[in-house]
Length: 630
Image (cartoon, rainbow, N blue to C red; front, side, top):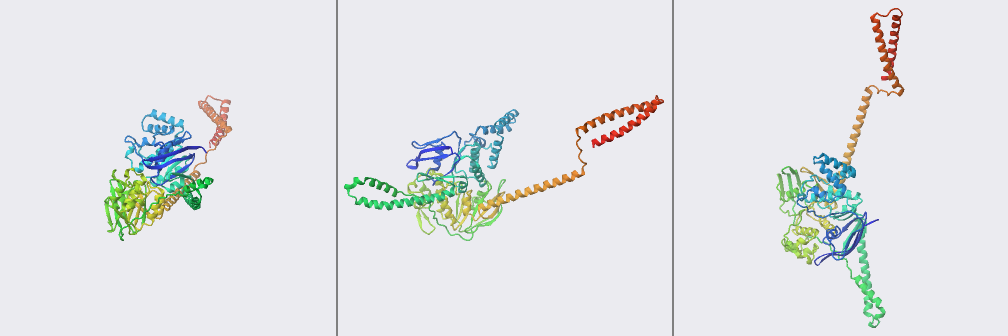
């Protein structure tokens, strides 16, 4: 298998903070690799170096070994003020896509000559199938207004436009940083299906475990500055990673036991005999180094207090919300119960965030009533993330809320100690928030929500930018959270693990309550779609049978279809028509002569006999003519 990429001795530091040193690896054609590492260890920095956006410290090198095209999907997208969606989607496109772009422009130009030229170019490049594929990509990703300024798009729209641009380029090598962030579930499933069928080579960072498990055939784990490769999907990685850690610990324990024996020998060995045992002394120091190795696994500790929650939480009665033509909620009635965990599912822009803002009081309903319990303490984790002053440090953000934090067991911690539990060591406490990675900012934001001891948690896209290790810990905490939980997430694994039931936002303010997991809901939808397709097929078959029966009935009522004449019969028919014409003409001439009275004797007798013969011939030939024409 051909090698696509060779990476040697990559290093990256920011000031005293070392992200990684001397990383080396290779990627072959057809590999679909996920890079897994904790937040803040340099995943995004590594991808940017590979994509040529950033550079390695020192002598590191990135070398693509074949003449291939590379497409890079950044974690967040920023667009220039003069860029339209059209510009972004077709920027840097291949020659065939450029031909399609010209064809699309010619369609709306009202220039017939230009359109004819564009269609000729489409024919020459055999681009019609590709044009159909582009239309399918844009349609599925719901990209409709190509003339819209790109910088006016929402986060989800920007991500969909960036993905469309990447797929349309048909690059051989894709580098993707958190491709599922801000996407709705329909778009995620489309991208998952596209990449699983594609023959492209792929390196990506993602926290979406279903997405990762169904696409990738290799995992690269960046741990303590070292890369470990696992041939297999995410499930295989979890199993083999645990084996690697246990083997490492066993080898280290064995080295420590042997070290005690060697240390005793070193202490007893006379100095005069040192030269005779130099090999053993060297081995002792190697053993000492192996025995001192550690796996420094930093584990997030989520232990936060919760204020008492009464029986009444939030009661909604006949809620309606409308802004201009947008209907966010239509006659919604529901009483939230203590301890229930609800997932919110629906397309982007269908009203999920509006619903959350109504619950917390940021918006007032057009009509209806919201009755909140007196003990209610809402913790609202918003999708847009933490809002901070650029001059604030990590410790400043926490101390602005409280100097001490109450834990679930009744104990308290200082703000600094609470930060340590969320993987912010003392060395990071005075780091400015704007210098943190995306995942670290999210983790800090989560900390600020939990330290207020909420009893009703509302989490709007909490998984964006968090690493998989943090997600696993967060899931375990939320699973045992005794308060009420409301989750908006496009992470299917996260929803499956936590939600007892789902609010399905169907559009135009309609909300359906589905009891079960997200996977159960998707299977329900697929089954319903299969039933609908089957019903449509049966209806089409029934219609076709009815049309066939009607046609057969009509056919029986029509005269039989005229038999096609043979060559000989056709010639006979042509001759009959000539003979009939000649006989008619001869008959007319004889009748004229007889009527004039100019014939006498034998001539008159012969003319009378001939007319009789002509009449017989005409009857005979006309009968045959009719037979042939029937």
